[in-house]
Length: 93
Image (cartoon, rainbow, N blue to C red; front, side, top):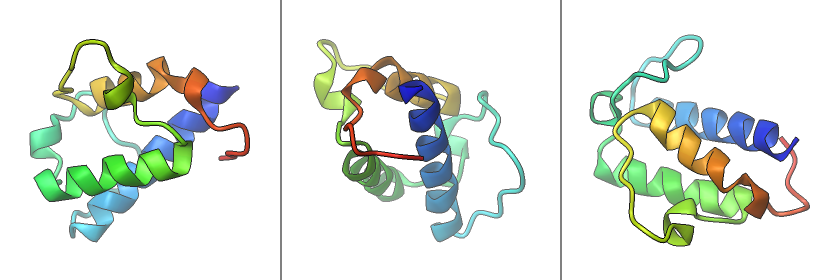
């Protein structure tokens, strides 16, 4: 259940960040898309991570014992899903 909520929120916020950056995205995002090729610059990515922390109640990058830097959207999503047990109880999709 928590992982489904996290997945929906991450996808929605990622699409929103792309739209704010002027990237035209239709449909679903491919898990294979490289983050560097997605249209988000480093500032956009930082804002996305901060927004997700506000929405979800956790930042998986600070919870990691060893830093991992995702290369693709799928890797980015999987990091959030891996730590979905930290989802705040009051968060809904």
